[in-house]
Image (tube, rainbow over all chains, first blue to last red; front, top):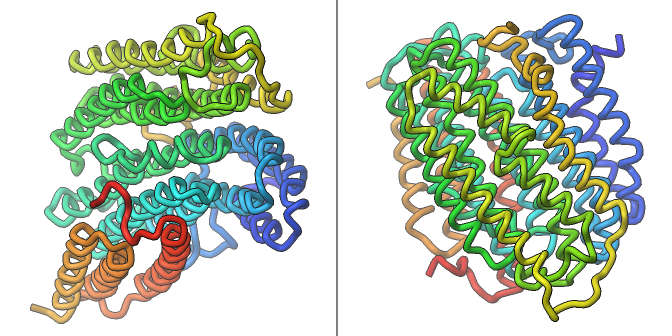
Amino acid sequence: MIGLWSVPLLFALPLALGILSLLVTPAWRPRLIFVGLPLLAVASFDVLARLVVEGPRIYELGGWQAPLGINLVVDGLAVGMILMTTLVASLCALYARVYLRDYPPSSSFFWPLLWLLWAGMNGIWLAEDIFNLYVGLEVMGLAAVGMVALRATPQALAAAMRYLLAALLGSLAYLLGVALLYATYGTLSMAGLHEAAAPNVTTHVALALIILGLLLKTALFPLHAWLPPAHGGALTPVSALLSALVIKASFYILMRIWLVLGPEVTPIFTAQVLGVLGAGAVFYGGWMAWRQHHLKQLVAYSTVAQIGYLFLFFPLVTGTGPEAARLAWDGTLMMLVAHALAKAALFLSAGNLILAVGSTQISHLVGISRFRPMSLFSFGLAGVSLMGLPPSGGFTGKWLLLHSAILSGQWWWLIVLFLGGLLSAAYIFKVFRMSFREGPQIDRSVTPPLTLDVTALILASAAILIGLTAHLPLFWLRLGSAFGAG
Amino acid sequence: MSSALVFAWSGVLLFGLGLFGFIAHRHLLRRLLAFNIMGSGSFLVLIGLAQDGRGVDHVPHAMVITGIVVAVASTALALVVFRRWYRASGRTDLPEDT
């Protein structure tokens, strides 16, 4: 009977902890993670175990039937995202517990916001109808805006405001799309839409609104302007959470809706446009990352670039053969998970380097390799995955996408994969070149607490390991999807 | 034109007006008001269009109530951030917008 509890627990528990942490004194807020993290880890692994043993299924919350009740989908994709969230968010929470000690007590509002963010994300991964996706998107988005504003400097407030306006516009466009779909088909459930969806004008307008709204929230080029100030300017654990997980949620929704509507409804032209925008993001984001002078801004622009790879999914899965589509699915999810792990590691180790030299400027990193080899090692491991060098998760993902592009005869995406990798190498090595240069600028550094280095290293190693053991997670992610478990 | 379509088109009109205001104005309070008008527009579409030829449908009612709660919460958060931003910078718009 425990298994029945673990599914709703995944978002009920963070929600309860979020409210509880508002009620206790600031000193007690961080300590709630020692209750929350183990319980959420157990619930996540229980859900995975049940998926592997019993297969994918639909969970009816409280035994109520849709549309009055809420259905939750427990398939490979949802469970994979839940495990990714649990791993990344837990490590960010451990990092934040140490990191936030140097900040004023008002920064302890990070904790309620973290739990609400977590509840929103788990709600999105599990939602089976397009309206609950909207609710999850809002819960997550508002918590994320609060986290960006935590620093309370004018820059942080402006970044939060800009992020909030983009998020609000995005969710309203999405909501209008949902309204049109409901008016046309009279159902909100993905299974119902999958059966009913037909190519007509209303559906295409709804799809366009949903795509636009979600692109704005995912910060796909050229709608990315809000991302670098919000992700680059926030507190380090916040940057890691936002870049690794939050932007993946809106992409996940787009991916699900795209597959639910099916190849008859989703136009190949739109898929190609999404791919071209993704290519633009890879080039523009990589170029801008290389030009940055502040370390965290560089990492934030790297996110703009990496989002681009995910959008190659649409041209590779639409109107192509089953084998190419399956490879695109595998490759995109591998890129998604690898980026979540690597980008969290990159932000956390960048935060450590900034703590060590006391400056956010890349040029002030001169000679840091002698003092903080471990922080730099995590940064490099994560960089290997972002560049797509073997044997990392980023390499496996790109390799699968490359095969999919060749199989479907769309050779032009190969250029994006190759040049994008070169651009990533350029900006990662820009940081390395500075750190290994010997110069008079610093002769000592602050030693950050060990926890900060260890959490970054675990995430960076995970980004490498996922590439070495890609077979099993990819098999699990396919469970319950249209791409079979073969 | 059925009454359902009148509601839906009014909703679309409101959404468009709101969107125009959201993009055209620089004052953050005006943009926030425009956002609320857009929200009302999409709720009207949600309620209006779903009634068409199917009798009374309770699902959109539940959705709109949820949507209103979300809109109120978002507006409250935006007002708090706006007030903090105004206190910190003395400006009513965002820096690069001028």
